Amino acid sequence: MTEMELLIDFFVDAERQGPGSPSDTLRALQFIDLEQDKPLKVADIGCGTGGQTITLAQNIKAQITAVDLFPKFLVKLNLKAKETNLQNKIRTLKRSMDDLDFNKEEFDIIWSEGAIYIMGFAAGIKKWKYFLKTGGYLAISELTWLSNLRPKKIEEYWHNQYSEVDTAANKIKILEKNGFSLVGYFILPESSWIDNYYKPMEERFDDFLRKHDNSELARKIVNEHKEEIRYYKMAKNHCSYGFYIAKKIG
Image 1 (cartoon, rainbow, N blue to C red):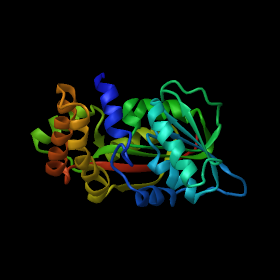
Image 2: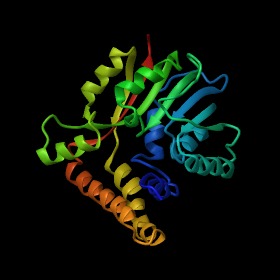
Image 3: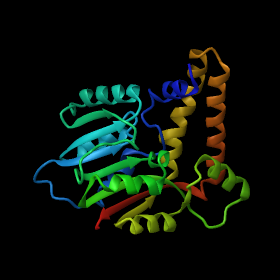
């Protein structure tokens, strides 16, 4: 198996592929003010196995298009949708987030938790804006500096993971420059990293290594994630995910 195939296998049975929680999704949803006399059209881009997709479908009247590049993640999401009797509200689409062909102003809400980094924050906003109705909402969580001064070791590690990591103030400037008005922002709590993402991940390490015969690539994936956990614990006062909710005004 390639490293990417191993990564997919490592995450396919996880509830989440990044930090977050149902309460974070619901908190972000509270900032969105749209009439629900008819189902809203929502795109969940980079949905993974759909932890947040299910939460959205359970809490708003909507038709949700859940987009991900990896079919195994979408199979899991479809199973979850059937188990929760939400299959009529969720449609899955295998597509790269930088190759979407939706119609202009097709959606009322574009949602993306912990995934826009794949395209880059600015590039994603510019691309996805085309698909969002004027007056519609963009809701995205994104790696964000919490302080202006960081230990060099921490700054270098997270910058190497994601070169666009920046402060909330600078992320908000990008939103405003691209015709959005911020309506809500909050920082994900430590529990969204530790309890909902890292602890379940650590519980999968041994089984994953056994399944793949302790191969060099499997060990590499586990060791890289162990390192990420260590760096998060060192950096938790300096770095987290910020959740940005913004309205398209132009």
